[in-house]
Amino acid sequence: MVGDLAPLTRRAAAELVRSTGDDVDDFLHWVVSASAGALARVPLTLWVLLGAYREPSESIDATPLGLFTHGVEVLAAEHDPDRAHSWDDSTRQQRVAIASRVAAHLLFSARRSVHVDDNGLLTDVAVPLGQLVGADETAGLGTFEVTRRRVRETLETALFSRTRFTAQFAHSSFAAFLTARYLAERLHAPAPIPRLQLEELFLVTAADEPTAAIPERLRETAAWLLTHAPTKAMWLAHADPEGLLAHTALITHPGVREVLVNGLLDRADRIELFDRSWRHTRWDLAHPGLRTQLTEALTTVVDDTSDWPDVARARLALRLAHDSHSPDLADLLLDIVEDPAWPITLRRLAVSAAMAVDPAAVTITRLRATLATLQPPPDSQPPTPDWDGSQHEAPSELAAMLLRELWPAHLTFAEVSRFLRITASGAIKAHSPTRSSCYLAVFARRNFPPCWPGQNRSFESTESRSPSPASRTTTYMTTTCTA
Image 1 (cartoon, helix red, strand yellow):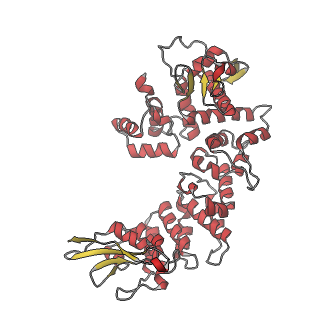
Image 2: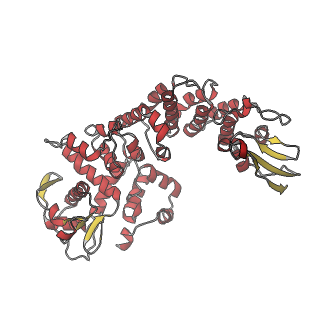
Image 3: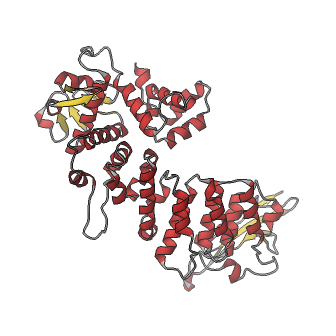
């Protein structure tokens, strides 16, 4: 029993999966893609995931909703037989329904745990068990009364972790999932919860903001609500698409994803200018209409004279394309890479996105052809403004991105070496105008030994340390080795 419910680290979970002979990396990637990490944290539901991974077509529904539904049911049937009394007053479906009520009650009261002894002195930090008792819930084909004993039996399942006096959900994702389940059932009821009431719960408005926002602690619940009841809760996707980004893997409904993408593109000027945290978010917004949405956003060529909203919209569209896993976007992205009318910054994003969605032979051939059109100055000449340019619009930056994506699998050293300079002292030098844009220098430092075969050579990278004339210096980072 202890082994079945023991909390697992990622390494421990990987060891258990490896012991079964399954591909650990592929399995963990599948778990993360399904946002099912909460189910992988205990052996009991880890085996549930492993079964769905092995036979996705014949076992349970392998969507996040299907996995969590099945996982919660498994945990609701798991209990410790050594506890004070046996389970003889509730069914598994009834315990899931009661757990959903508990989750919603904790959310509405802004508390994390239930006090199993009804201690009224602790109501500020825990919900007394008695407040969960009464009225009826629905499970299976009928309704049942929520009694004190049934609530206790629910709190003794593996869905909850227990101390001597309190019980709380074993993982926050269980609470978010079950709260959304509870609300979705009432949205589909003959007398549904008023939308205004839910808006007051989920959305926070500010006088200086044109839109509302979902508080961070409610975002996973909101995502699950969109999954349980996409048509009834679509207003959440319209209200705060940025707030839902971290949980888009849970939202599989194509209509909701389309609304999220449109919302993000409409807010691109603000997102690109102010909100940086979302760029590191793991998202999944792929849906059948994504190509059409991104094509419309990238149809008009953006140049250096374009207004910021147009530039921001194109930048965001390219980031969305990068994470879309949609090979049919490759042609559109490669057209941008090859078109000199687009700014270098956007062409760099298009290079990375094209390799992310379709690293096939056609993509590689077209990127190699673009790299061949970029001609750095000869070794005998200093770098020119036309090559090194300004901080973000230098051809050298586009060359560096192409080298990073194509080296070493698709380029020879001879093709790369023409972008590196050999000084009179025998140093390999990658020139760049500023400290923040030394892409060629970084590429060279990371990919090449600081020497040529058969000779003593050193590697140098020049960076302007400060734009101030009084303190403008050139820093040489040199490493010497003997071939």
